[in-house]
Amino acid sequence: MAKHSPLTDEEREKLVAYLDGELDAQTARAVEMRISRDPRFRAEMEGLRRTWELLEFLPQAEPSPTFSSRTLSSISVLRPSPRPRFLRDPTLRRWSVGLAWVAAILIAFILGFSGVQSLAKRNRPPVEEPVDLDQALLRDHRIIENQRLYENVDDIGFVRQLDVPELFGDDS
Image 1 (cartoon, one colour):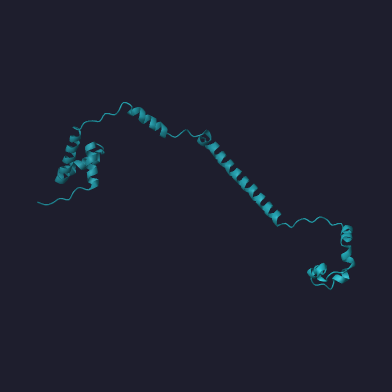
Image 2 (cartoon, rainbow, N blue to C red):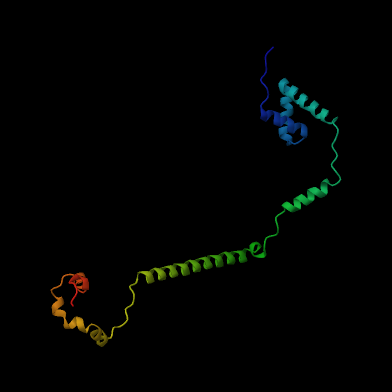
């Protein structure tokens, strides 16, 4: 006795669809021809048909009285809320997207301009007040009078050390 290979999943799906009446006429005729010619196919179809018949004897579960109301309430929770008018109307949507882009560009321009201005202020040297020449001459009169003495000094720190009284001792 030759051992036959089992049916593929695709062949079994065709048989189930045939038994459920889900196939179109041409495919149903092809399955019927295969059932009449292939004993392995016919045996599988008979086994599936008997399984379907046995399912009829099982007790049928009755849905609870609140099943439909609970199902409808859960569906209403999952239903998306209606979109705002500007999202439904393509013209308004196009305008709102355009205005959003304009606002974003304007904000970017203002922030960029402000940033450049603050960097420019930081890097700019402080503005010097105009100097009154007469006041400067009066303030620096001693230095100007003694300029010939300062010409030979290389370091101003040395001149400042000469002004320290402890350096030369007491003059009394």
